Length: 201
Image (cartoon, rainbow, N blue to C red; front, side, top):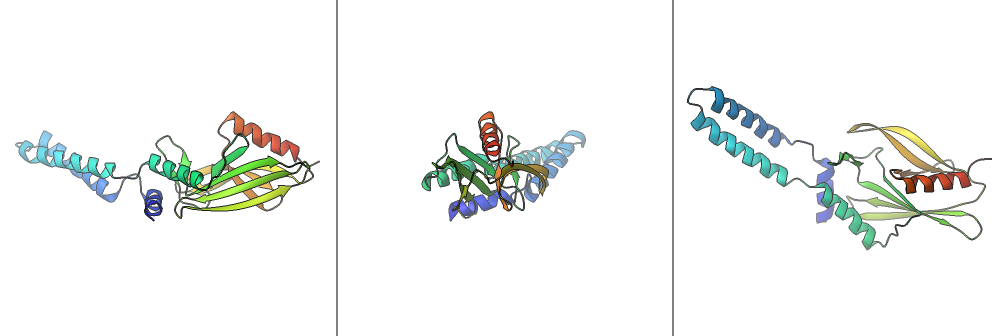
């Protein structure tokens, strides 16, 4: 329950809270008083100091990106979700709360891990794990795709609370789409190989 509440708070927190904005305004105002108002130092400097300390305390209690990453990895480990060279993963940003990490990465409470296995008959199996960070839950779906069935990469521009974002999906059949993040050579090559194997003739 604690992890659930922390994750929920993380995806609700803003870049600056109302209290932090107020403290910044007070700090700026007190700095001006201490600098430009005659005999303003004895009043402005203590208020400036208190405002800065209070602001730093507020920032320190914010939930950090690393804590959410640790929560995600713990769920993956606890549920024995395999991650290998044949795994694609990504956050679903559509219709979801989104946060931007310090590194500029967009994340959401919904994370997908897709393990891809080639069956003996030539079919491709997709084992998809949908991880809900807020509920600390995992939902598994599996697909068995024949050689003649089409698998393609599609892109869609989605609207988030951080602006418009291009999302990449692995589309299986007509209706099933899996969000994937192709941020390195290995994942890009894996997705390309799968799509080439199941391209429409």
